[in-house]
Length: 124
Image (cartoon, rainbow, N blue to C red; front, top):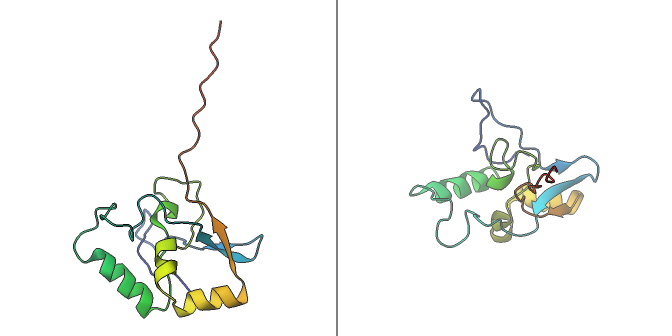
């Protein structure tokens, strides 16, 4: 089962959105909605009219899920591994989410944060 396609790489190919954790054998699920979740009130991602509905419709028609935008490759946090959007998972019970839960389970991951910035020590 694949996530609903909505991200492409620099060559226009579907980006690798594997939410599986190979060490734990579980799928990554956000532990909570990220700060700009597309399901949060107020359209924090500034989606165009009908875009959220289209994403949800596509994921539901494919019995799939939506990957959190904060974990998409080449977004704000390149170190983040793809994870299932908590906002979507809390609202919809697609076949993919049900199978993942029953067969392997989820490992919850926190939303990515900016890399810690370290001040270089003053040289004296």
